[in-house]
Length: 283
Image (cartoon, rainbow, N blue to C red; front, side, top):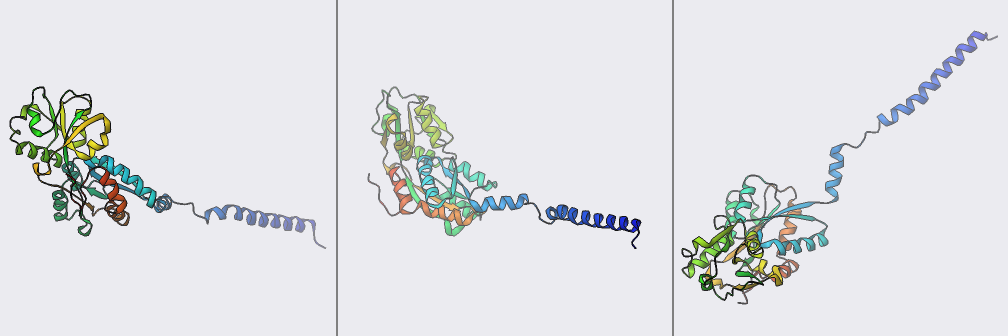
């Protein structure tokens, strides 16, 4: 006969074993199933979509903003732009700024970066040639037909981009030199950090007239009047781009660089007055 004390001990053993088994199941399952790490979450987010950073010369602002939307719609790759003077953007890239693609207003800057090993050589490509204009507000009483008109009475302030680091400023200086007005007009010159800021000076009435990019003059629409200056007045503004060597998204950066010179890209650039590789200017 089993003694009552033995029965009690047996029941206690069963209860302890049951508790250990059920308790182990409850605590061990989460421990054996690791939580997603922050690295895993970041990797998933990256694979879901890439965002490119494109540094672009200021004259590209309206054209590239439109072109970027088309590129994203076709590829799903987002693009953010950093527009400024080509010289300043070049310095940023030299100092290690996180840029995937650089579109300069003068090919010499791209060639300098290539010599320094900072861009991928087989991605270097011409994409446009720029033109310059004389731009005034639509309500301005002044009229301009040629560069010589900058010397007329009533013209007190003239804006150009800073030739020290802006290719469009260099073109403006060369144009003024071509008609012998560079030295004469020095006291009247107001320098913009880039060609987009130069246009803003004229749009806000802070200057009487500005020498700016044709692309920006077209984008300004009915807010102003402009005269296209002869291409012979300055050295060609041959504009080139390249993928920056330090990019973390080389494949996608190459896609964007190629898209600029695609039929869709060229159609956008053409609307903003750029002369495209293989094409001749209309005037």
